[in-house]
Length: 329
Image 1: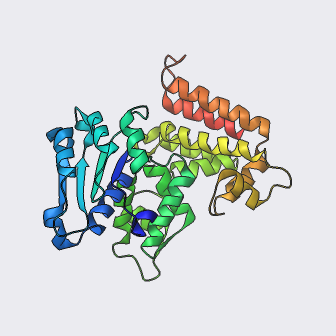
Image 2 (image 1 turned 120 degrees about the vertical axis):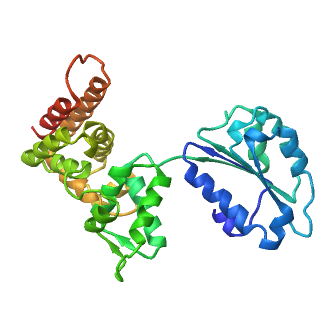
Image 3 (image 1 turned 120 degrees about the horizontal axis):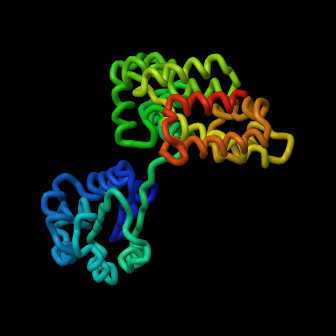
């Protein structure tokens, strides 16, 4: 995007991956900022993979623009093409006045294929991935909200991240609801999140994780009981990946040379803001490195049992209670 915004264009872009949000963003930018509105009528072509062939795409790409510097050829849903690999012929000698954008959704083209290597040599090959960790999702939320000249309470951001996860299309759609009728201070709180998105600020996965970190056994078991009675609110399957991620990061903190400072934790975990450091500082006081390793092993065990491995009749609710008891004991 930085290259595009600086006016640099390459003849070929392959945009692929599981996360369609970034693919759509890059493609949309090329389509709206390369040609003027008048130039698009004759010089911007959109084709669909399931309805076209590699030869048709190459024929179109080899045409010259009409009264414009470029022509833009976009191939949407390229994963539907039966002869996609034949486009490697075009990559050997792309037309410099054509910008060919290939959008491959839901996966990636095998990097061993000649198409990928040849495209990378003359253009850009971009793999779009969803954020995997809470901190990355929260960072995305903060950046998205900052672009709207608004701010979000750190805890509210983590609640949204924990509830929605890394589905960026859904995430941005939900955040867009929040901007409607936002007050003059442009600050998004947990109350606003609860009202606009419907995520309760109490009894969610984030609240349970906080109770575990602080070893608040009473609250942790109260929330676990609530989850057992209200399966749609989150429960074991929402808690496992988030808790595993946290304790995995906590283990990394024990490798930081002493004294362990907030900045050192940020550097070790690749954080860009210090708001989440407090949780790791608290956890390092409450859990030894050995206990942290045991918790990671326990989470893996519970995860396997929740999927039926060495487990005949233990319910997810009972597994959740077992895990909570193990962590806070």
